[in-house]
Length: 493
Image 1 (cartoon, rainbow, N blue to C red):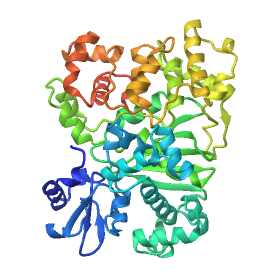
Image 2: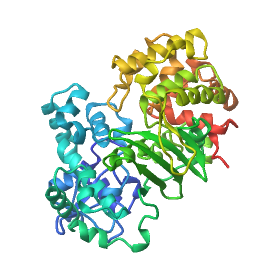
Image 3: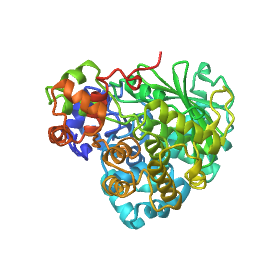
Image 4: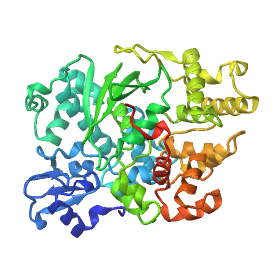
């Protein structure tokens, strides 16, 4: 799919007429006669083409004076896959806005993280998305407010501040403007049976584009789970979350048409960030149809895709945590890596209370890890040097891993660290930074799969063959890994 799809009028009209859910989040349909905007798959009778206009974001629709459809709820559609597959300024800005940076640090904070002026950021976002960073953040606040109104019994004043509004009046005005209903009216529309059962626990549905194969996604997270921080229980992946205002515990359960998400937060202001990070960890904004179509063009990959389409790349909720764990996993088994990480968690993690038991700590901060005695690490001296150099650079801010990271530049910085080879740098690029084209030609499992399938098995020859899989080589890695019987490829029983 091309950038700026909303400008291809004919294609948008065809998607709306066929109610094609694959395009939800790619663009929004605004109806000039009713002043309502919808997702492409809206179940109502499509308007006449001359009454449709198309926008690249919900924020742009709201800026133009349209309100959200009450039937299809366009504010709850999956996010645009563009922001995860692109590495340019707009994509990096959108990832940061989704993580709540504008609400916490303002537009100057966003610009500072990206290394551009506020004027440059605003101009580029406006040109591509029809809305500036403040309008995009406002649309996200409105969505968070609706979620809290409909899923919690909290007083409206608490919801207003938890959603990031500076005043109750702004909260009331925004909700009325975006949804054409007062906050209290939104709440009365929710069926009584959907009221939450456990106080302090938020139950949400995380949408995704079908198909989604949960096997390798949840299998990977469960098989590599660090005791105390993560666990698989009763069909759900559970883990602790380090968040800007406090901490949280999330339980994520794969369902046929959504991911069930149960969140417990120490500070409700962290709700939008927690949702954003969980969506990202599960790669829920991916476009599996585009990925699989590209990979199917290789006759040796096609049978793997046809057998189990919709594989996602298991990502992370914390880039620095993943980098530390990648180093702990160098040249050891999955079980040994978990053991090393569990020792660090017990000794240096921050204790948290889990009402359900099972989870006990947040993964240690890079500051805590940088302060530990290197001699206490039960690992070879060379890997100890790799570990201590990494955590010191992360703690000092010399190396930064985040949503705004430039993939190519960060990979080069990682490769300059002692003990960092292509595998470690690329697995961090793939699973921490979210580069959809990261590739692991030296990985033992990939080389075994390649040999079995009749693909070239030497790193150079395999990389040459994989050029045809771009820009989705990280997804090809998932399909290749899945040829093995390793636990990462299966949902736990």
